[in-house]
Structure formats: structure tokens, C-alpha cells
Image 1 (tube, rainbow over the protein chains, first blue to last red):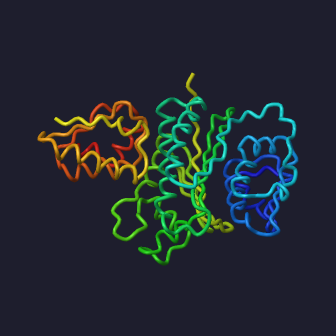
Image 2: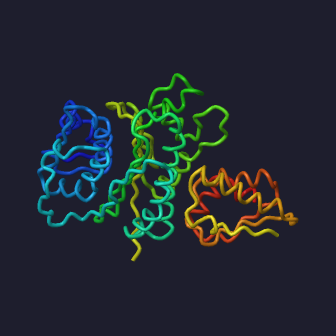
Image 3: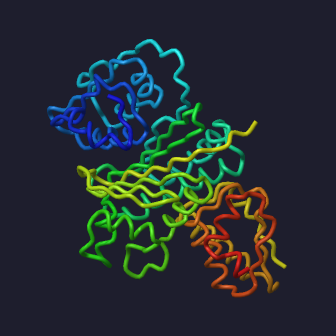
Length: 274
Length: 91
């Protein structure tokens, strides 16, 4: 199984089985899929029959190891006894991937403290200074949304999860920002009570704010503009059963299996600095 | 002219909470000074998110209408935020 954004719905039921995450036969995952797996890990972390089985193929195993998935599971309180295939495998010969490991920030000051490292990581991915700064600004604004829109309302795990991968041979970077919060629809309910998940995401992207007496909240509109106009990239957002992908040409939406909270990603192709 | 070196607040300016704290700090400096014009010096600032900008720069513009100048932007990302949020047009 090679699982990416487009193919995740097709393989979802093969890897999420009851309260278990079965990755044995996975050969490749993109960072979007890793975000889905992190979200599922959060959801099952306290259930009695939880289990996570790591990939058996070296290439996919390498991705999870270098993203620090095991450390993330430790932070969630997973007992190593519920993990299988988690031991090291030999590295694949030419993985051609740089990693920004999964970072869980419980509070916004923890998140803010990591932005400097994130900026230097983008520079290390051979981005120009201005591209690296703008990419960091996108992640920072997505993170702000997580904390601002969930304050006082967290239904489950508090905080944001950030991770990224740079596919060097394609000069393509994709970053995710994930939370287990209330999601777009609940955030917008006070002013727009009858929206579907997809409609709520689109409203957020249009710059509509979610809260009564709030004359602000257009950060997502700027994130979209920078991703598309400055990086010629793609912005992907899933909240509940709504999943939207926006690029220069069009906005695509699809109904998918529900995800608690929000998973957002931006995918950019950059010109490496020599 | 009161010059506020934004770098004193950090090179990465992010979050509404931090923007609000910075705003309160700045108005205490400005309101105890007799100068009427204000310059925000962005040299050395690498990142300015819309969230911080809403709470700091936009609120300074509201409070000191027509008196806030934006100067020495050295980061394209900072310029993007100031442009997208309409701050530069008002400065």
C-alpha cells in the first residue's frame, strides 16, 4: 500500500481496524496520511484494546522512525506493550527525504518556542530566506487558529501537532498542523448554525470569522493566498467529514470518514537556493 | 518622532496573546511621550503573523490614527502580512 492524500480514503479501512492501527503492509505514506494516523492515535489512546502495528517495509518504517512517531506515542501515554514491529529495521538505500519530526505543543507558548527551530529547518531544506520565513509564517498562523478557536472548548487532547517532510527529488515540502479540537463547524456554529463541515471550511477560507463580536479571523484567508499565490502550492483541510483541497486552478471537496478536530496541510514546490 | 524598534519584541512576532501584551507595553511608552508621530522600525524582524499584527499594528493605527509610520522592513514575509492586512495602505 502506498498511501497519500488522494488514496487515503481508499485504504483507510485497511489500516484503521476497530481500535487498532495496522500499518504492516504500508510501503509509503505522505505526511497527510501520517497526520491521519496521529489523529487516530489520539482517538484510541485510552481505549482498552488499542494496538498499533508499525510497517514491516524498511522505506515506510524509516519514515515513521525519522518523524519520531514512537516519541509522539510515548507523549500520548501509549504503553510499548501495545505496539508491534516498532523495533529498528535497516535504512532503505536512498530515502531522499528530509524530516521535520512530529512536535506536539500542549500550549501556545510551547508552540511559539518552536517556531525558530522550524524557520531554521525550512532554511535547511534549501529554501530561500524569504520563502523559509513565509512558510514558517503559514505554520505559525495555522497554529494560532488551533489555539484561538479552541480556547475553553477543547473536547479532548489540548494542543497542536506539527510535522513535515521535504521530498528532495521533487523540491516538494508538505507540512501538517493537526488538532483534536472542536473543528470548523462547531467554531462557526454561533453565527452559522446550519453549515456542513465542507461549507464551514470554505467559509473559514473566505475570511469569515467564527465568533460573535469578533472583527478579525482572516488568518486562514492569508494562509490560502500565500500558499497558492506565493508558492503555487496546495492547501488541504479536513474537519469532520469535510475535506477541501485548494490550488491555483480550483477548489475540490469530498466527503470522507470523520476526523476529530482539524487536519490542515500546505504543500509547496520551492526553488532550492544554491 | 517616537521610534519603536520592533526587534525588541522579538524576531518572530506571533500570536494574539503576545500581540496584546506588546500593544499594552507600547502604548505605555507612547502615551508618556510628548511626540506626536510614531515609527515602527521592522529591521531585523523575520516573521510577523496576521494574528500578532491585528493585535499590535492594527490597534496602534486605530488608536493613533494617521500618526503611525511603518519603516525598515527587511523581511519579505513581514511585508506580506503588512500588505495583505491593509496596514501599509493606512501607514
